[in-house]
Image (cartoon, rainbow, N blue to C red; front, side, top):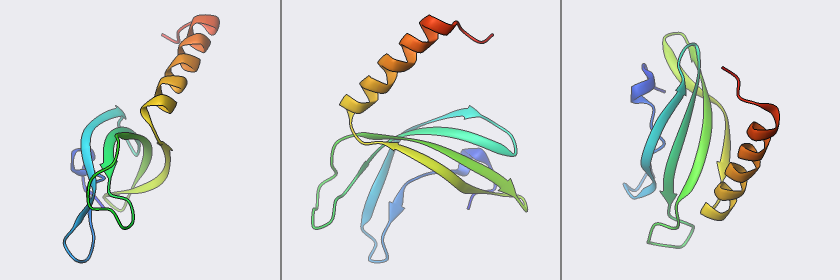
Length: 100
């Protein structure tokens, strides 16, 4: 758990010291007691030694007792899927207008 939003990371190393998840980029979408962050990352699959393709994650974090803990997440498993999400969101934004 992290004390500040800036301390939140999805880098992960297993008990043997092998990095399994590598955070590439992080953007903070909202700040506060409930914060939303977006990550670009790579992970090493089971039985593999190399990092795989870039993936994306949107995560919600709740600040409780002075520390942020993960509450929920949505993983986008490929660049192709990310492009689909972007296209659909753009179409909806174009249709329904932008919230200002």
